[in-house]
Image 1 (cartoon, helix red, strand yellow):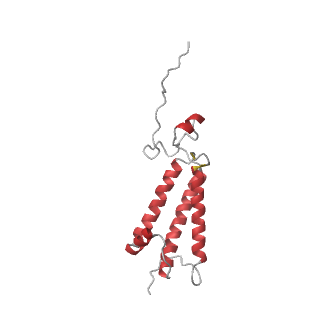
Image 2 (image 1 turned 180 degrees about the vertical axis):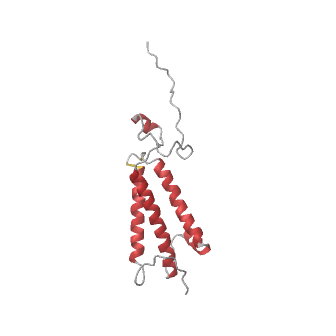
Image 3 (image 1 turned 180 degrees about the horizontal axis):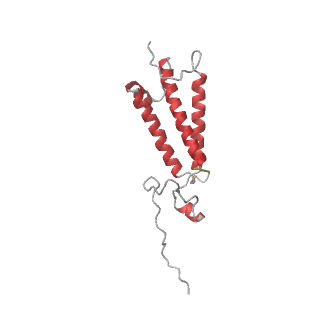
Length: 159
């Protein structure tokens, strides 16, 4: 006689942002391939390469904010209307908002890095794409930089 129950006894997994298990997690992969397709699960272990990508992306985001403020002082124009409003209101608010939006998006993407989008690619490839776009953006900003070089300090423009 079969002893299996007809109901699913597995507990619903909590979202990783709501439940912190420890500094290092145990679950690296979904247990069943069927579960991975039917029920998106968040894992509690992330590859160190993802951490490196996130930190480098945030560093590039900060470099982009720095370059944007410096270039605006030299006569450039911000194309994003929301960011343009924030820059003219308060540069500190601009930097915090820019880093905050980027960090929040990266946290959500890392939480679900193993999921497949549109049956085409995994979410972690979106993280790599965001990193590549920031590399291209910072490279573009450096290519249009006027003068002798890139100042490494935020100096208020007087003129």
